[in-house]
Image (cartoon, rainbow, N blue to C red; front, side, top):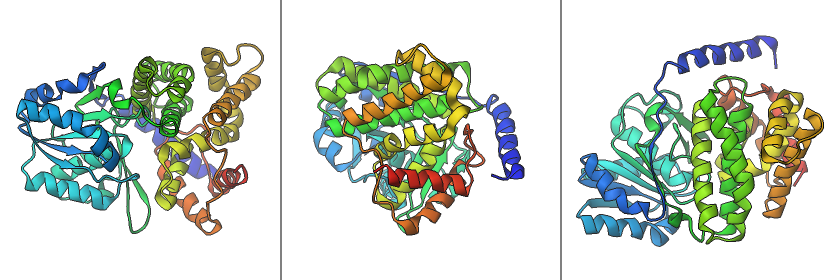
Length: 403
């Protein structure tokens, strides 16, 4: 990376770090515990919502959403249901939700599911308050700029953290480019953390969404700026919890203690990266989602150890501390501890049957992947190592080679 570009990116991040400390970084109000979804009608009442837009995906719409719809029916709360959100939600889906919301005179949102329904609902809510802007015009930092309608997020996986973040990632169906909308107004008003909504989640989804949460925490932790004492603490707590509880949840879908702890960990990791940012892992992972519809958690799980190894000494001190906190390795030098920590991430992936690389990446797509990843990461993400085209391509080729 040229010294001029690198200096500009670091200068931008330093200035943004100062400005960010003047912003209001609120968290959603957490409502947690088994059966906590029963409180949703009361929450809507507090916000004056008489008709809600319920947003979810096809599977959750059949299996889990009815539990919440029954509560709404019992309380006499009207709603409009959209249960067609796809993985890596599209601009078209966002526009359909916005249209339904307006046509049915809805007054608030309930998003039920993983990151896709929550992101789609966030972007639709943004379009409701900013009808003058299409999704692409709100991509980037602080481009929504208006308060959303009352918004309740109900995660059914423990991973994305979208129930607590400023982000919504939406795919353009025509170009396959992923837009990352990042605005403080996108943080939901309430996060309903009900472990019963994650009971019996399939092992594969448990694994990849859990590793998504780990990626959020680790990337937030190793960033070179933006961090606060709170974001550092929450990232550390999330990493330790995920190392302890994820595989228990993976092995036993009915382990409610593990499910509860993973929901809390994902929530903490979500706030950590909301405040401190993510990095090159996410930037590259988003290109895979856009081009190949790769599930985001799976992409992060595979890419995380590869990028951490590529960062080298820039992350040794911080990863060594995580190795100590998790008990992976408490003796030896920073490089040894870092190697053990990354090695344990690889071992967790292996034990949960997550691949080591991807062999479906097409040679012809690599230049586009590099372009998109660098455009997303720079200058906003406070990455420990700024990538240029050559280094980004090298990492992508490692992802292919390790398949």
